[in-house]
Amino acid sequence: MYITQSKNIFVRLPLSDDITKLTEWYRNAEHMEYVSGNTFYSSKMLREVFNKTISCSHKSFPDELLLICELKNGGDEIGYIYYPKINWLGRSAEIQIALDSSYRNKIYGIEIALLSFYIAYRSFNIKSLYMMILSENVKMKRMLQRVNFRHCGTLKQHTYKNDKMVDVEVYQGGVELMSATSNMTRFARVYNLYE
Image 1 (tube, rainbow, N blue to C red):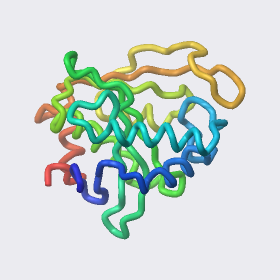
Image 2 (image 1 turned 30 degrees about the horizontal axis):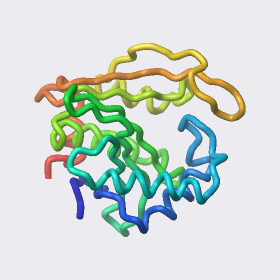
Image 3 (image 1 turned 180 degrees about the vertical axis):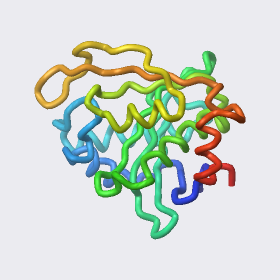
């Protein structure tokens, strides 16, 4: 069952069959290059975490939500959208986006990002979104600025990555992103998010 789609991508709820792929992604250093934390968890532990997250994602008002992104052409799983913290009463949420390293430097990254914003605003009535990004992730910062996310600050030595503490930058966007004149709306039309 697909939640929404764009020009090239379907977005759906995760299934128990996805645990193997999610574990594979998480254990792949190249795939997790810009994701905070390390990949030292055992496969068994990862399976338990993903099983819990998948179960939570199928609730009516989940505290966290994981969505799988698939290519329309071929059905390959190419990444995921993850809302690790959803504040339903406050209408805010954190977003994390991951794209399989073999699909980077193509159009899919911005499409997945736009889909994540679209789902939050249009499907879940979330009014404020934020992303915490490793300072070294220049491409994601540039993309967020293109869709009018604001840089809110830098958390110095906030997370552990590659055996050291690194900075994380916080970006935030609100309902103005979905106004008729916003860059986000223009991009949404280009990528057929309104199908």
